Image 1 (cartoon, rainbow, N blue to C red):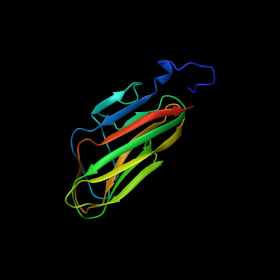
Image 2: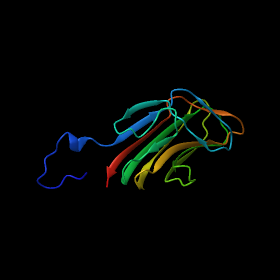
Image 3: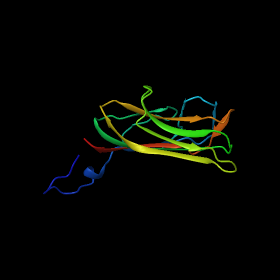
Image 4: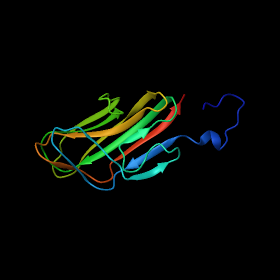
Length: 150
């Protein structure tokens, strides 16, 4: 909802639809496989956009939505680490980030962007790694969305 000249800023106008889903445990990833991330905690969700245990965030109204996703991958010097934001299960990715692997520390990958949605569209966070073997996504990976404008 846009505020136009002459309108007052009220509490209801500040109620932006938003949520952040977070994973509190590690997730084992198979090399070369796109893996949707399931989240077990809602840090905040003021519009019932997400159900704990799921992978999809549902955008209830049409408009411009922002998103941000983060994943930390276990130390391993081989390959790439990727965080992607996917529209539903379509294989279409409006956001992605790829990082070379880091040895001795987590490889941090973040992805942010925006998406013009129809009411009921869904977004999910997907991760990918090419270490040559199993590798963990660290706890505290998160995925946030927020409504920008109609």
